[in-house]
Image 1 (tube, one colour):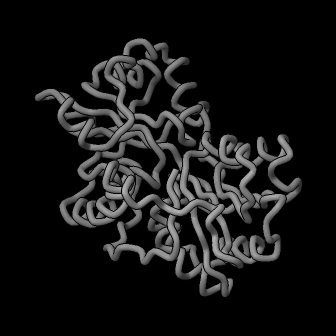
Image 2 (cartoon, rainbow, N blue to C red):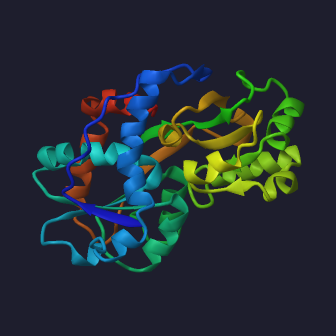
Length: 287
């Protein structure tokens, strides 16, 4: 997990909305790459960040609004942070992590105002007494997409058999091991009976792991949220994961039991407002 305080988002050219079956063109790849650099610099900086650790919620200044945000919304929230501060009149401190890291964070007992993760994660937090009951508010939804890099098919598989072949013939398979797409991808692998076939060629990193493993004449397979597919410039998006496996995934907010509820609801009101609709679309999120 990582935390940011008052960062100015990196300027970039917004990616246009696209149909699910399309190839990212030259200018689209350039725009996506600019966005990718900003996030990858944070995600994979490694030792460079160790010398200057990000502040934790425990280090929040008085009056600062503490928000736990899923990694799938990192790029969006880096853009929205100044607008959230302007709309609420409060400084914000944002900590990023996978939706499946939320229970560990909640168990730490650190006070916070708001968590913005999957609806299922919020519900589990409510059940554990760590999110305020009745506070869940759905903010947006995100599809789980299937993409290929290299010499792969240009259209989405139209049958379980062809979907199974898509997995078995890939040189490398990239999936999340802790994010919101994890249970959906796992259900798909088990149903298609390809979990063992892809085990030894599965990675969870970025292009530095994917590209060297793509054999000549073959392709790499990527299954992730639509809002994170920009991290892989040059990807061909074939479509979304079949509905029977889940998705689109609700992205929801829930209040921390020891936080400032007034400040948290002000942030929710902003996130639910039409003011951010265009940015949601740019980040390929749905209302």
